[in-house]
Length: 70
Image (cartoon, rainbow, N blue to C red; front, side):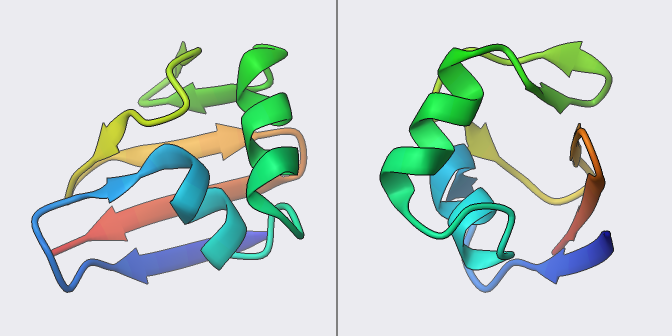
């Protein structure tokens, strides 16, 4: 899955982004995915569930890529 997400604010929390884009069905699943080290932000593993994702960043994992635009 490749998706482009357009921000309407300055940032979105990583777990919220994963849930909103359909990578996970719930926020709890998103938190587990991040905690397991299965999500990368700009090519680096991210373990912070509430990481602020801003325009220009790319979130990736097994089977998904989300480009964030402003």
